[in-house]
Each structure stands twice: as structure tokens, then as C-alpha cells.
Image (tube, rainbow, N blue to C red; front, side):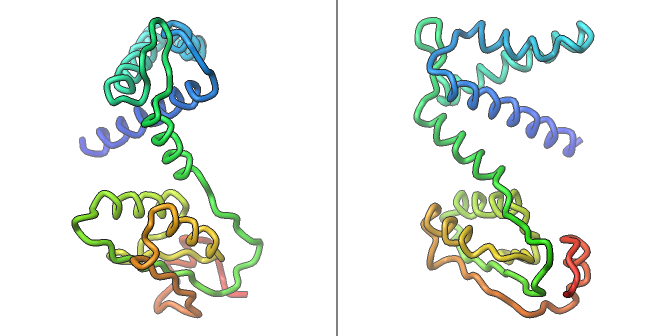
Length: 188
């Protein structure tokens, strides 16, 4: 049951992200145009499924307006500043680090200590690391097999957590077989 709710939230987020991206690329769009364009994408489905998807689009649009990410301007929808920031945040989560053909045999370990009073920031850091491809090792310790120093510098600057995040390059991690299998990297 919990897994179903999580999957539903992920689908809703994808739909909202798509709608925000569309709003960003068009200066002005009518409410009907936005809903109608997305609805046309579902023409290949049977009519019952089409109606369900169309209602999902309308509900997602209303959530975006209610949460202040889109704003109605007469018959048009506009992306708000809050919407632009959210879209930028989602785009960061889609970023993937480049991977060299051969592994250099070193582990990149991130250790962060963000206080409880900054729980929201801590969650953003965790979500970003997970989305980028890091593997959780233990509380506030994440690992990655390839060079990512530039990304970490950007992460520190973007989240303003320079002193709270430590970047370590390690020659070995005890019992790293699970990690090597996870990342599909093997000693040179």
C-alpha cells in the first residue's frame, strides 16, 4: 500500500514537472491549450484510460496553481518565480555524472553533518545525491566510484554547505564487493 502511494506521488511529480517545463518554454498558454496538448498525447489509449489521464492533467494543473508554481492570468497560465525555482531543482535531480570507461580503483566518499534544525536542506542533499547516482553507505555517508569533484564543489556552493560536507578519495573500502557489483566497476 505504501509503495503504491509512493509510486503515485512519483507519477504526479513527473506530470507536474512536465507541465512546468511546458510553461517555461511558452511565454503564455491558455488553460485549454495546456490540458488539450497533453490530452492529445494520450490518443493512443482507449477512451476510459484517456479520460483518466485527462483528469490527472487537470488535477496536476490545479495543484501547481494551488501551490503557487503556476499563476492564472486571465485565460493564460504563467510560470511563477516559485515555479521556476522548483523546475530548476527538479532539473538538478535529472543530472547524471559522466562515467569513464575504466574505473581508477578509487572511491569518492561524501560525509555530511547537517544539523537537525536544517532537516529540509539535509533531505535535499540526500535526494540530490541519490538522484545523481551515489550509493548510501550509512548515515550521512555516500559513495561513488568516479571523479565528481566538480559536482561536489557546485553542490557545496549551491546548497551553501561547504563546511558541512567532506569529500574523501579512498583507495579502498572494507568489503566493497557489494559496492563494486552495484556500480558494476571492477579493479583495473
